[in-house]
Image 1 (cartoon, helix red, strand yellow):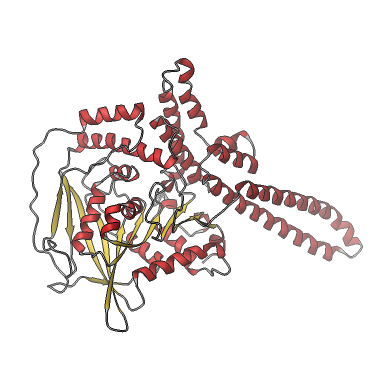
Image 2 (cartoon, one colour; image 1 turned 30 degrees about the horizontal axis):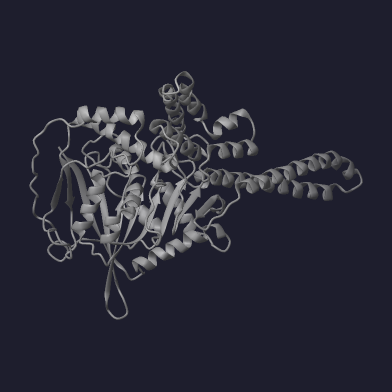
Length: 543
């Protein structure tokens, strides 16, 4: 484990109170001290030769070495404080404050543009009011094109692994501004505006998918094995959920571009078809009745849980969900069951293909709408036989994290299940707010643009916290076989493992993460003696 990597982790929660301006002042003061130190070192360097003549050279070299080390440490500390300042300035949800912070820390026109790339796009979009006060959005398409180009540039930089520790923060602001231009309103928070923009885009994306691949008629969930305690109706290996997920609903203001998208939706997205009913197959293998389900190691730590998600089978045609059943026997011989619902990230980037773990689900999930993947996870939980009094946690990476946060935030899920904890890794979840009593940990790599696609900083309400980290100091797998290493689940697994292996007394910043880990284990009731079984569910859209 590297102490350097842990030192670049920052935890924010509802308990965090940061004066960003004071933090910036500290950074500037530290840099002034460093500069003064460097000036004295330059003077000492010029005197060393003369001091050697008087047999003081060894002492002078010693002081020079100490001064150089002090200067290096001051510079390192200033860099880290600046990194923290940029993260917290992002939480202020004010692009002007963010620009001001960046300008004070580094200065220069390039940095101001760096701080918020879409300010120009916003001004272009609003220029229409000078041409016609009744049509303020007249120039908005030009602003949207420019804004889209800026966000696309962030994506290009992300894919090509640019050495940029704040790429995610910049992307977060710019996505939020694009969403505002798309919606045509400044009256809502960035998370709400992005939610509506994603819902509108999902509608158009669904229309594209149904034109390209035909309209699907439902989603099929197939269990490889089921627990013997599975609920009523689980005797069938497959369940088919008929109909199309009711995605694309806009909750607040639609805007002129939303109207256009809905017009395209009504014309293109619903080709006439005759509904069909898929018959469920039989032959389920249940625990205690035939072949036994697979026993696995209990994920006592969050890193072990993320590692399991990374091991799920990847397929272009089918999605996969894993549900873990934990059985713990107490001293009185009483068994207690708890569950882990493991949800992986995006597997396909097309609009509505066979695999429901696709880009369409991403847009629907960020838009807080129904999706085939959300319906599939709910069905898998029902097939597994999870009872209302049995604790269940939701864990997901990327898209899986969005679904996990959405599940924990839905009132019907909270009413039906006992939600124990939530873990998201590299997921845009700023718009979701689970019950305040539910411990929630959101992991965000500031080099990763994916968690920034909600266009807003996490509010960390209630018992939620966010772990920001810079993956530069992690031993991540990069190269042509993994062009987006900053988003890879292995990167997030290693980051949380670094926290688990660190000493909280020496690294108090990660103390809250350790408390979350303890809450998770306590709520699930898992121990070293817990027996865990794995149940795999395959999902596929029905055409």
